[in-house]
Length: 222
Image 1: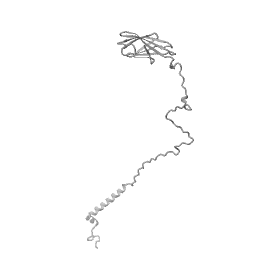
Image 2: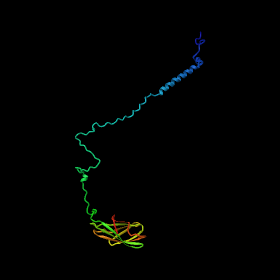
Image 3: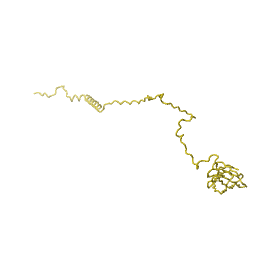
Image 4: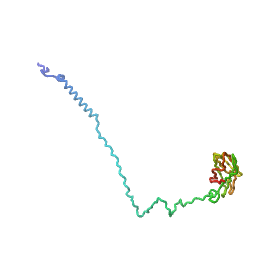
């Protein structure tokens, strides 16, 4: 009996063929790796979304004037003209402010009118020697009521000191070199006078002040 399992002469098995041609195995492996790489790239790549378009810049349209406005007013609307220069013609209708009257001042606070009297002062030098001189100051109230009084005497720098006295009450203070302020300790009644006797210490000459005022008004210097 013959054995049919014996190999045919000249026939080659598959392992033998593969062993004789190794490059076939390499090509198959490279192809398989390429297929796997392409599949992996397609799996991990997400769907592409188109980029959102940028918003268009805003557009500003010019504002149109209101349709209801008109350059020419209606015929029944009165026209008012404003003049920059003040008019001398009196207004037909006085304003509320112009028609409001101020309350009259009471007699105790009203300033003396012209010709109704005032507080005056007369300065007169009476004697003089080498280091001092004497003078008399007469203050008169010719107003219709009691008045306070204050006299300021301003000499040059050669007058250094003052001694003063008065029967009606007197206060004396200095504001600086040669500047003396004399005031009554009580108001002068209407028509009353106050006489102040003064003695000044000095170096040099001169017995008249450069300035004399009573309640802000000029004195009479004799």
